[in-house]
Image 1 (cartoon, rainbow, N blue to C red):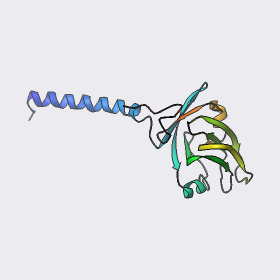
Image 2: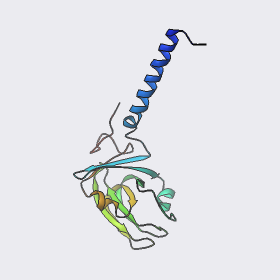
Image 3: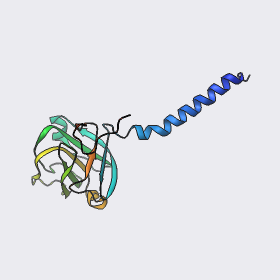
Image 4: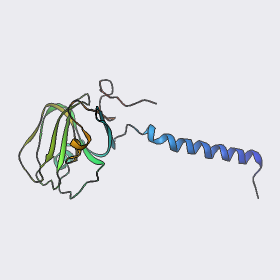
Length: 166
């Protein structure tokens, strides 16, 4: 049994509305905890990230992992800008460490940290975020000092590249 024409018309409108919503979702999801966007003269990139936002998560980081997807990373968040230093103890994969200030500007990139190396890797004196991605990727993409990061955990009032609002 076919529904009456007004019901069929309503169903078609609903299908169109849901389709439009599904197309719009990626744009609406630009700023979310699980993703970081970077941009610069080199272009832009997006990484799916795990958050290290507690002392315990920051201490564990990416230790003991044998691989990481190319478009993935870990974002370390600190409550205030501070001096930070990393090492590669128990870290099995090479990493690029991208040090970022409170406004979301990249201040330093340490390329291809050596797995298992315990030599300190200083990030600077006023670091609030550190993005770790696969080693060699920052150079291939062109990510360097002056690049900008967008993420909802940045203070949007001072962010160099704020999240877009609805």
